[in-house]
Every structure is written in C-alpha cells, then in structure tokens.
Amino acid sequence: MSLCELTMSAALDKLRGGEITSAALTSAYLERIARLDPHVHSYLTVTSELAMQQAAQADARRAAGEDAPLLGVPLAVKDVMCTRGVPTTAGSRILEGFKPPYTATAVQKLIDAGAVILGKTNTDEFAMGSSTENSAYGATHNPWNAARIPGGSSGGSAAAVAARLAAGALGSDTGGSVRQPAAMCGVVGLKPSYGRVSRYGLIAFASSLDQIGALCRDVRDAALLLSVIAGHDPRDATSMDVPVPDYAAALTGDVRGLRVGVPKEYFVDGMQKEVEQAVRAAIAHLESLGAHVREVSLPHTDYGLPIYYLIAPAEASANLARFEGVRFGPRKDGPTLWDTYKATRGQGFGPEVKRRIMLGAYALSAGYYDAYYLKAQKGRTLIKRDFDAAFAEVDVIATPTAPHAAFPIGSKTDDPLQMYLEDVFTLPVNLAGICGISVPCGFDNDGLPIGLQVLGPAFGEAVILRAAHAYEQTTGWHTMRPPLES
Image (tube, rainbow, N blue to C red; front, side, top):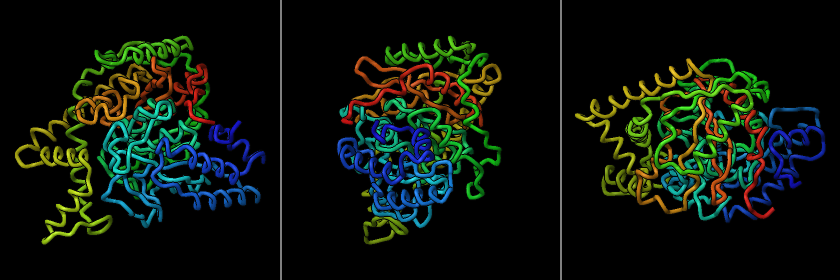
C-alpha cells in the first residue's frame, strides 16, 4: 500500500510503531502533490520546506519518547485561515502576496498537536461559492472527473483529501462549504456547532455563520481532527466555554435505539433521482442497524435560501470593508483616497464577491434594513425553532447533503441562482448554529459520489459521529478512491 493511502489513524499507528517516519510520509505526499496536483489544482501554496522541517521535528520528538495526537501526520489547510509567514489569499487577488504575522487558533492547534502542514488549499474567493470556480487563481477539478467541480467553497481541501494529496484537511463552512464538497468528492466533511471551534484567524465571510471544520477519509479521522481543534478560545468572543467530549469514545458502531428523523421538506422536486435513491437507501440501512426512523417536519425550510442570501451578504459587506489596499494586499492608486479605494476594490475583488457586497450593502441600507435584514433575522429564529422542535423528538436528522452530484465546470457560472440552490440542504444548519456531517453513501450513473448528511443539535457532535461511523463501517463507500494514477 502506498503511504498516501493511509488514513490519519492508520498513519499514526505506523508512526507510533516505528514502521514509518514522518519524513518518509511527508516526502511521499509532496512527491504525489508535485505529480498530480497540476491536474487537480487543490493547492494554492505548497509549503514543502516547512513541511519537511516539521516532519523532521516530529521524528525527533518521537525518537525522544514523546507523542502527540497528530505527531507527524501531513495535513492541508484551506487558504482562508491565517498562517504566520505563509501566503494567505482567501482565493482573492486583493490579498495576493499577503503573509499574516500570526496563525489562526485552529491551525496552531494542529501544529501544537504535531501535525505537518503541507500547504494552503484552493477556495472560492473569500469562501463565497459552491464550486471553487470563483477562486481568482483558477478552478479546482474533481478527482473523480476532471471536467466536474469539486464543490465549494472548501473544494481544494476536499479534492486534496480525495486525491490522496493530504491525509486530512481543514475547511470552513458558512452555508455548507465543508459538507457539500465532501459529498461531491466522496470524503467525510464535518461542520461543528457554532462556537465549538475558534474562528480566531479565520478570514471572515459571515461572522454569525462561519465555522471551521474537518475534511477526512473516514469518520474516525474526523473525530480525531475535531478533538484537536475544538475548545474554548478567549480570543474569539463567539467561542463557547463548554466541555469537549471524547469523540473517539462515541464511535461504538452501535446505533440501536437511535432516533433518526427524516424531514419531508428535504426530498424535493428537481433533485437528482440517484441522489434521492442513495440517501433513502442509506437511511434504510441505518434502520436495519437498529435505529428508529421516523418522519419529521422542518416547516420553514423553504425560507432558508432567501434568509441566508440576505444575512450572509450583509455580514460580508461589513467584513470586507477592511480590504482597501492600505494595510495589506495590492493597491491601485487613484487621484484621491476614494478613487484609490474604488480602483483597488474594483480590481481586487471578483464578480461573485462584488455581487454579494452589493446585495449586502443594499439590505443594510437606510430604509431597507427593517424590510430585509431584520426580517431575515426573524426568519432565522423560526428555522432554529424548527430544529429545536425536531430534536425534542429525534436524536439526529438524516438528509441528502446536496441535491445533485458534481456538475460540469462552467455549467452554472452564468446563473447565480442555480449555483445558490446547490446549498439548499446545508445552509439551514448554519442559520441554526447546529452541527452536521456528510459521509459517502453511493454514486450516480456517471460514477460521481453522493453524500448522506447527518445533523445533530448544538454541541451534539458525538451523536452525529456515532451515527455516521456506524453507517460507514457497515458499508464500503468510504473505501472507494478516485481513478487517479496510483
């Protein structure tokens, strides 16, 4: 078996047993990245020298008798998380060449746990997109079919994990940006509850929705990665000071008696037939394992999309006001300060980012705030109440992750509304602040992966990991690999 085929957990076993070294494992990944990533374009920056230094340090620590949760494991980081001294662009020209003077808490926790950082992965610009086509540095290709999108906005991280170009990766999820690309690339994507993982050092898109998550090859790795990055951080005012459970202990393989809700609103006209068939089969499989399946209702689901696309752009318009070419990034000078701002932002931001800034600025403008933004926030409360009511009756909720498998690159770029609809099953989760995980559950007729989404209440990551792991370990979908060269 190639070293790059090892899951994070399997690699740790071999590292701890002295069968392999981190230097050899890291070298194997860097060689594979050099050979295959030109066809996938999952990375924006490959930190080869840093990675080999960290690998050597990991091997030295292990030789000295030390151990750590991720000691010597090579991982990737979505390029929206600040990494000291490493280019961090958020997929935008306006941050081209920016090297942060500090490291995001989640990334620092990986480093403190002994992980090796292979590089920064591609993303839709400022994480605004569902296909990774909005990156200013070119689209990422799906490892299962290079003509298809990998999902977004964490498409680079999902593609890197699927293509065996990283053992695991961090992504960010504002409306589905970890779970949707995980489904489309055939890997596991975990979006923790809002406040479970520090957002310090995450370049903000929509501050009340953003959450850092994990992309991995199996649920055990997702539990491991979450256990490292979770926890209170006083530098993030939205970080919750609540205990972090032993997520590995939740992976019992037993779902007998688990109450699984199936929302009737998530099986809609227009979704791909193979997706519905695969997800219903996955739910039936959970039932065969002893789970109790019942229908539930989330009656305000139809309002999720318009609510999200008022709140998220409004917050984005405020967050992106800081990018004006004065403090960091390229600058386009004009005759006056305002001309400099307009020229810098006009040249630095891509079309989708400009679209969302304008939508958000309009929703927040005088005379429209109450009609749009305030009303959207009230609707958000109704969506949260729907989930609260459902979780009073069931332990988890099972849905499709996305309405379709990966679509052709370029097929939806001229129709933003069709692109936005790809997040219809994931964005309510962010509006409610709850947790969710996507696991592979089949393939469509074109051989493209399909994802099952399992949702849990706020800070209920242990129960969704339990359900997802039991399903995964009694099926073989997660063991399938893309048809790339070995």
